[in-house]
Length: 154
Image 1 (cartoon, rainbow, N blue to C red):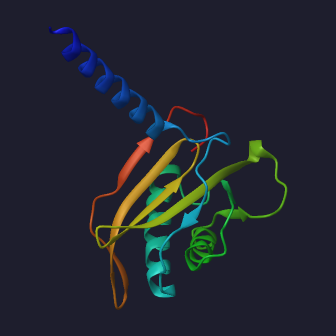
Image 2: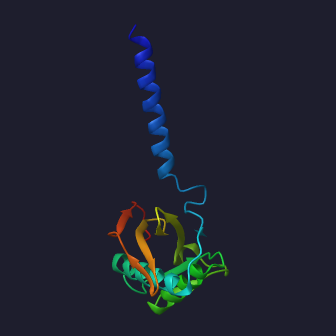
Image 3: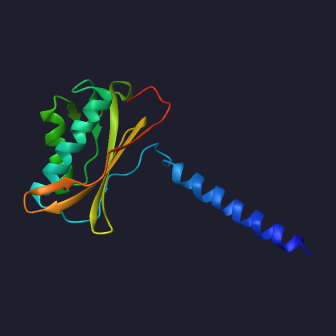
């Protein structure tokens, strides 16, 4: 009578494995789609963008690459583009660019348990951090999470 017990454990293990594999999938284009699912003030968007681009520069060097950014027209997308340019990165948005000369960058801004979850992604790197919104903008409330993948681009 131990047979049903093993089937249940096997099914649970299989479901867990599939769900973890799905977490690692970047989609058909190899990069997440930029999205902002919550409203940010211009001050908060600028605070988060400045901090995240500063952390990106720590990982790949300031102004070392041309960034291909597909913005969604949000306040954060505009603040991110301005911050990238401020750090010396060349930024292309809608133009056709040689993929060998650019690093695609995507972002996600989402609410999570009363805080803001910010994520910047390239094909080789994900940076994630939590922020608390305040009157003067946004303040980091978590350490920076850095996930590196084994590709050649930063």
